[in-house]
Length: 639
Image (tube, rainbow, N blue to C red):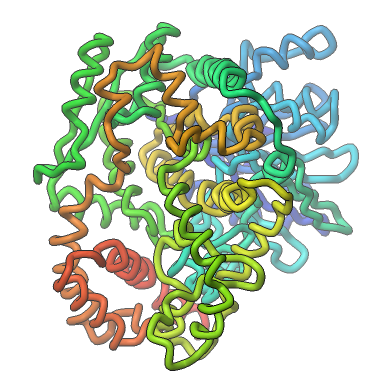
């Protein structure tokens, strides 16, 4: 039965999407019928508009709905085809669903007006699992095909939507969030020390690994097929394939093609049955988002955030000026350190799946909270634009790589010497130099000094090296292409997009990123960096496109990262909290992993030069997260 099985479907006044399920081909047990309710209801914040279930002898699906497309109750989930052979529970959006429906509706009888979930069902019936190659969107999909006895767990190409699973005994449990899975007694709260070790460098860990030993994550661009006899992961899209196949388009061709793909992405992502809010900072990417939205004629408004301590990183005046020019209503939120403290506390309560590696997550959580207060449930963001155009930091990275490469025969033996002072220059790994731009926390040499746990996980550089090595070609920009593979395989899906999905979904708000369109990414990845960053100018193609669309005061503004807004907080307020909650707390859980000497050393160094605020955040956030799990893990071990 779909939609009303187990407890009756619960209709709610407010809105969101979370998916969950249990697969047991030996037969769903009574305990698992109870588990699916607990697992699904733990996702209520992702979709309190409607709660639905499907259950059968071997498969249970749950769904919490945020009604964005076709808000009619016929579009509720889990959804089945007319013969009850294909069952789907789905989180996200298929932005080209109308185009696909037009191909399918002559052959299949659709019961909904324009539900993208129903398009998934009949696209699968028509093309099989290869249907996902036709989808443009952000999605996590669970699809049960009764006719062949297979369940598919599918994650979108870029990894905008999360999907976790646990193979436990004869069963597989899955969910949009880890905390939901942990409601089942079958899944233990056992922390993964290797993931914690990775976090200290990457601020995240690479999928399929998570911060829990018993739980894995579907990799971006992959699906897992589960049958009675097998559980196999398949990669259906790989950004490395495009990075390895350069094209030689001229600058003018690249500008025209990029503009065409960007405009199409913008049009697709402005489709909704409810109004949209645009997060605007005053930078290129968010301003382009707003320009296209106004051109398309959507029902829109904008939102901006600033810190009450004046600093050079505040772009709110530019945002106000541009919104006024476009006649777009703008709400500016001014926050203080108390708001940040409350935001951190509240966000950890709804998002205990991982440490908050990037403090920008808190800003996004506050933005999403205000968006919801305004009665809006879609937030347009600019994430992905820097990867398309080329980060300014790439130029410095390339120069540094050339210097280190030329000196490697001198430096390598010195670095390996225990007496060498610059031990932290440990970037040489096999035949590659690990890019400093991808080390967001601590180097391996630093971790070797500060790591306290008895177990010594494998070097984080191993997975970084393996990912870089996937792009092996003989071009002048090979090293930058390898770095971009790191961006799209680790940093973007497991940190940047997670800092968008979790904070927005915690507030029943869906985020959309037009720059994260896979067609746009495929084309951009093939272009030489000499074209994307012509004359060593970062984002030169995006800037050329912007010339016809954005005023000079936006185009000529220096690049300011969203998180730089937090500089006063990181430099002054956070160290006070760090001192109180870690240095002055003998039982601080982080001491299980980080030795006291280095916890104190980093604090003293920061007081001296104000340059360690970000590393203090990495440790502070880890301690806050561990405090949620250490006692629970201990209790479960003693059951």
